[in-house]
Structures are given as C-alpha cells and as structure tokens.
Amino acid sequence: MPLYELFALAKPQLGKKAIASIMKAVASKVMEQGGVVTDIRSYGERKLAYDIRQPGVRHKEAAMWQINFAANPATLPELDHTLRVDERMLRWLVLKRQPYRRLPTPYRVARIAEDVAVPLAKQQGPRSNSRSDDDAIFQTQQD
Image (cartoon, rainbow, N blue to C red; front, side):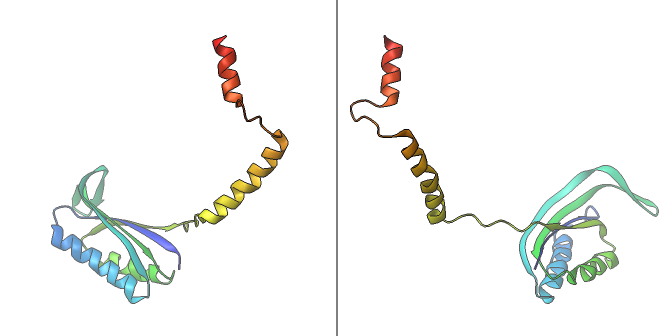
C-alpha cells in the first residue's frame, strides 16, 4: 500500500468537535478500505496567504489539518467524494509520499567499514609503536 498525505482546509470557526468529526470521517473511510492511519495533526485556525472565495463569502482564515495514511489507491476517489460533499471543507490535497528507505543494520555497517578499513591499513603499512604520526607533527611544530 502506498503512503499518502492529506492536507485539508476547513471553514474557520467550526470548533474542535466539528473538525474532529471531519477527521474521524476521513480516517474511518481509510480504515474501512483496509488502510492504516499513521499520523493525524491539527494546525488550528490560520490566516491564509490569499482569500478563498465561495459564492457570497470570502474566507481569510481556515482550520488546517493533516492526515497521513497508507491505503489502496482505490480509496482516494471515495475520500475525495467524502470531502466534496461536506460543506464545511474549503480545499484539500492528497499527495503520494515516497516510501521510507530502510536503514542498514549495525552488522552491515560494520562489514562496510571493515571492507574499507582493511585495504587502507594494508596500503599504509605498519606503524611504529613509539610515536604516532600526530605526535611527530606536534613535535615538529613545537621545535
């Protein structure tokens, strides 16, 4: 299942319960289709960069919220329909996110480091035990 990010703007001054009910409807629609909601964020009411006009109304502020989820692509038209019929919504955008790359295991990192370090050590040859290169440089700078 691909990862998606839904960012939405709702009409201002709806209240926390109304925004929560919209977010709950979207999350339940995702879960009905076998998806998983991974993150829900509410940014509160914010002033918009430009006015959103609807017939007879200009919105200078909006309630902003975001839901991250993993779902089947067939879920997106149903989400779009759910948000389109809700009169409290102003705008929304669904983005497909790139999947996270797995981090290498510590064992793999150690193997890569060893593969790099061994040839370098052979290239440099044996080191003297009496004084390291840093000590020799330090001594010449003091003299």
